[in-house]
Image (cartoon, rainbow, N blue to C red; front, side, top):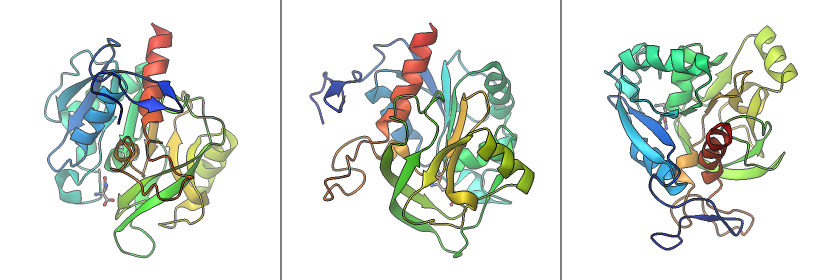
Length: 255
Ligand SMILES: NC(=O)CC[C@H](N)C(=O)O
């Protein structure tokens, strides 16, 4: 990692200093059973934004510029993963904010919440092999014009961790046609389809490009040595940072 005040370096370029130097404030919501809220907040700080902790039971978004729904086991995955969290008090504010164009990222359990809240089409069901999966997963970035992917090169191939039990993406035939036709696949699984997702879909965006959900965990691939195995020189170990840097970039360019 770069020095304490220098910030992370991606492709030889300093992309931000830890903390709130950019003035951008990103809310990270904690639900009962969230696991990855702290890692998401850390990734936000690493690209130079302020991470604002938000609580599921509140109706106050505290004026944040963007929102992350983190991974974990909200409400113990009862009913369906993400189903109960999608009805939390703060979700009504997040749905309104998303409709106004606020960038919203759902990671794994957060992706499940976004489909349950109908901010993204389709749904996530139990992995087709029936077991929890935990692996470094290769992905292709299919859409680089969203608020969360604009810093990737078109068609970039990246590796970030995947860990879930209900990661199989499904949608109706009509929805799949629309998703593919409109270019709404944000990330697609490469090499193996780890969970039976339709069309190898790992993540999708809404038409406007402000709401993105994905099953793999970019917040776990932000620092060499703590994310994907980098023994393979093709892997950077920090591919996840570009999602957070993308949101910062789109918010700063809007200002
Ligand atoms: N890593 C996660 O967010 C897991 C999501 C959910 N609990 C599942 O197993 O599918």
